[in-house]
Amino acid sequence: MARQHGYEYIWIDTCCIDKSSSAELSEAINSMFKWYETSGLCLVFLADFTESSGLDPDSLSKSRWFTRGWTLQELLAPPEVKFYDFNWTFVGDRSIRSILSDFSIGTRMNWDSDRRTTREEDTSYSLLGIFDVNMPLMYGEGGSKAFRRLRNEIIRTSTNDQSIVGWGAEADQNRHSSVLAHHPMHSG
Image (cartoon, rainbow, N blue to C red; front, top):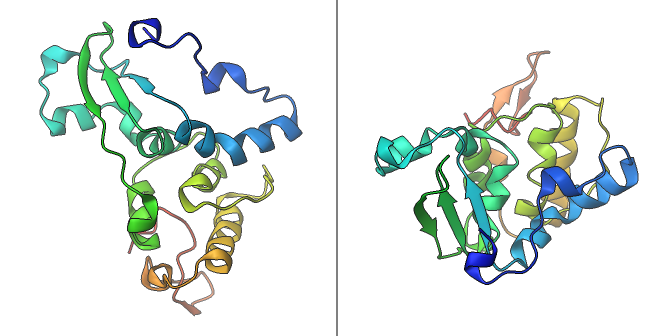
């Protein structure tokens, strides 16, 4: 399929990252958004979608691809994204790339609030590039701690955007009021 679009080489994240090496995994996750951003094209295979289901946005968005945490950066970063159904039939594209800085932190958090990952920490780690932050990966720390570290890094590096303060405000387990969410799924 890549050759049909004039590309000689492809990169498949699920095949090309050595997950047995924590150093390589950390480098790959912290660099992944940039890799997508500098790519020419992202081909998306929707294994659970068929063109005969209809191309309206509601039916397309029900594909599992749109619920996975890691695919958000595949949708946002590349200059061009082409979608194919389980028969490799072209079903549509996203060819206009928005500049992420045009969207508030709260808006970018909301994009991820309904997505899921297999490992709870990946809910936060999959957002690193979307917020242009780097941080060490600590699998086993739990989703709340990973998100707290991500949130603190976003606050540390953001200049004028205070939308994270009101986004997902809630009370914590100790009944202490908090103006900061404890998890990206807590969208208020």
